[in-house]
Image (cartoon, rainbow, N blue to C red):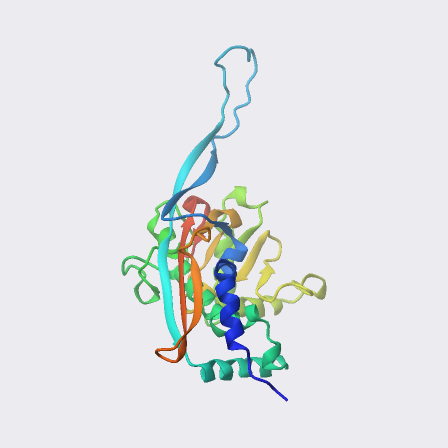
Length: 314
C-alpha cells in the first residue's frame, strides 16, 4: 500500500545541505556538463586565456639576455555573473500529489524516493532547463527578436552575433523541414571550421528538434552508419561521420534555429557556490500553512574566443 512522502524530512534535508542541493541543480544542465565551469565568482572575474603567438624556430646563437624567439601571451577575459532567485510556495497536498505521480512513473512507493531525487523532480529539472535557456538565449537588448529569452545578461548566441570575429557558416538560421536542408546546414557548419579545428574534438550545438531531424536524415544515408558506430552512443549526441565534430542536442536552443560549433574549453559557465549567497531553503510557513521554496544563485556565461566559434549566419 502506498504511503505519503515525508515532506518534513525533505525540508530538513535541504536545510542541512543547502549548498550541496543548489550545486547539484546548477550543475545539472547540458551546458555545465559539456563545457567548462568556473566557480567562486562573486560579480566579475577573469578567465585566464593563453593565446599562442606561434612558434619561431631560429638558428645561431641563443646565448644572452635577449634572443627570444617567441612566447605565449596571457590575455584576461572577463566573465560576469548575475544574481537570480526563485520564491514559490506549495501546500502539502500538492507536494504529496506531485510525488505520488513521480513514484507511479518510477514504479515505486512515494516514501522510497530519496530526498535529492524528490527535489530534482519537484523543481530541480525545471530550474535547470530555465538556466539552460538563459545561458544560450539571453540578451540585454532586443537584437534576437522573438528568440530572446530573458534580458538578465548576454547569452552565448548574443555574444557570438555581437562579435565581428565570430566565424560564419554562410547559411542563415532557417526553419528546417527536409532532410536535405538539415544535412546542408550541418555540412556548412562543419566546412566553415578553420584547419586548426580538424584534429580537435568540437561540439555542434543544435536544438533538440534539429538534432532529431539530423539523426533521422543521417541514419537514412545508406552505408554511412552501421551498428558498430551507433550502438551504445548517447541519445543526445552523435559523431558526424568523417569528422571530430559531435552533433549535440542542447535544451537551451529549443524553439530556435541557431547552430553553434566550438570546442568544449571555449565556453565557460560562471557561478559562485562558495558563499552564503548561493543557497536554497524549503521551510513550512505556519502563517500561510504551506511550504516556501526560496533559492538564490549567481549565473553567467562567457565565450572565451569568439574567433574560434562558428554560428550559422549568412
